[in-house]
Image (cartoon, rainbow, N blue to C red; front, side):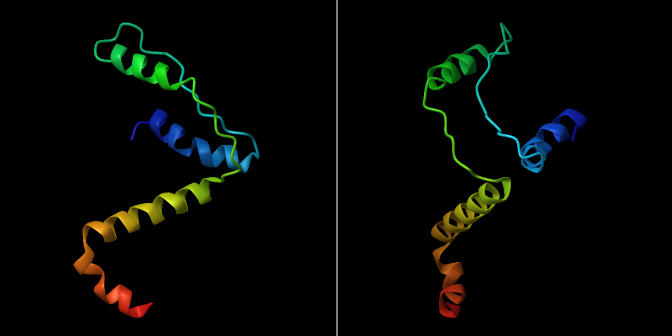
Length: 88
């Protein structure tokens, strides 16, 4: 993974450690690059939505994503989870 990508990957965790507010917002940055104009138009359409202001930590979001993925996997593989259901 490139150094820039690694830096971006760690940004939410670093912001949480610094107790700063992290706001994700669309900013146009692909002017006249083939294939990105359509992405910019679609993102611009959604940029006027109300911004979320939830007190979600990196760990809470990670847990929610992991739980969602697990439930989705269980739904797609119902016969594989019989033993899990017997234990609960």
